[in-house]
Image (tube, rainbow, N blue to C red; front, top):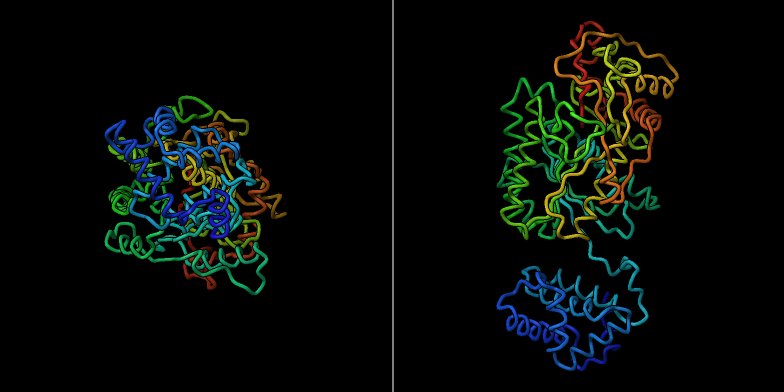
Amino acid sequence: MRFAVLQYSETMHLSLPIEMKLQSYRNEISIIYDRRYGNREYLRRPPSFCWFLVLHCTKETQRFLMLCVKSMLTVTTAALLLAICVLCWSTTSLTTNRQIVVGALAMTAPGSSISGSISGSQQQRRTVLVTGGAGYIGSHTCLELLKIPNKLYRVIVVDNLDNSSEESLIRVRELVTEYEGGGSQPCDANRLEFRNCDIRDKEKLNQVLTEFPEIDSCIHFAGLKAVGESSSKPLDYYDCNIGGTINLLQCLETHQIKHFVFSSSATVYGEPEMLPLIETARLSTTNPYGRTKLFVEEILRDTYASSPKSWNILILRYFNPIGAHASGRIGEDPQGIPNNLMPFIAQVCVGRRPELSIFGNDYDTPDGTGVRDYIHVVDLAKGHVAAINKLYTTHDLGCTAINLGTGHGVSVLELVNGMVQATGSKIKYKFVDRRPGDVASMYADPSYANTLLNWKATLNVQNMCNDTWKWQSTNPYGYNEVVKEDDVKEDEVKVAIKIEVIETK
């Protein structure tokens, strides 16, 4: 970075150090802008202001613009770059923004590639707060963030470990080390930090944000997620999912963190009126869990509307994530009896559960069982990486909802048959009556995610089953090394199995 700055200052033949020169540009642009508009909303009228700047700036500033033009930038773009300099220098995070601006200026030096990406040494590391990052989807997302080239991302995880294990993050560090070819050299400890923190504890959450002032974005997974349990414990779900999110948003606002990705759910669509489901479909829910997700979505829309310049939000609606990392090192490890279909099937396969109950075989589907949009958790994690990248590169996304799915449905029996192929063994199951509220089919139209995020699911159902089996067969009791007493007695007790076929996470 320093070499690039010096090289660029020599190219410009500046008589002063570049930071002093940029400060003089800042002062000049501020005066010109105030004279024209009477305020400092620099980017509200960029085209007219940029041309006005070119006509009224000093000769030395004009010479800077001409150098940019020779580097294949338009005069308007070059002037806009200077305007961005002003905006960055006027913020409170002085050092960080100087690095960003100087890195951008180095890109405009003659001989540099204008259309290329900034090299690793010139990129500003991004620091992401991941709530619930020790959980199933969270841990896979942390891994994908840390695998981005040039160590672009640093991850700070907060999790209360209510339904997760810190062991998942230890394994994420190991996988990153293996991915980077580090051998015995472990992943940098400061690239993945963990703090045991409940998002409902505002004081502790603020302490984390104060400890890591470089955090500039947040991916929010933390929350309770069992559909059936939400009906018996609705207050717990409203307290955690809604109250916790409000705490989080208030803390982020205090620390001026604007980039925000929210883990929503397909349950916000309720019983579908159309298939495949698109983002503009009617929103309606049938259970407390779904309502917490929908209420938080509305809170985010209201929050953005109240202060558009303070927020940049993407809402990701998931459709039935299953599978595990191909290494078998991290995967889904639910506490107690699983509420979702795939982990229950997997536990039947390793003998932890006696059999699978399938609710309904008389739906209007090809084989009579419910059809859902199952997506590999690694594809889903990559969707989060695409979303956070988009927030960093596009600062005016507003508050936008996006479906993440495959675009086609898979039935319960198809999923069972996939696990039979993966394990090479038969799976014991029985059909029982439908449950009230279950719908026949639900799957997404993911085309908007492909257009906006350049993201598409690539792994198929057999990949999902094979990776699930790799995880479950090598970790029959998840991240726990000892067998729980409840599991030992499983064969002696008949358990009322509630498989959440309308699962979404």
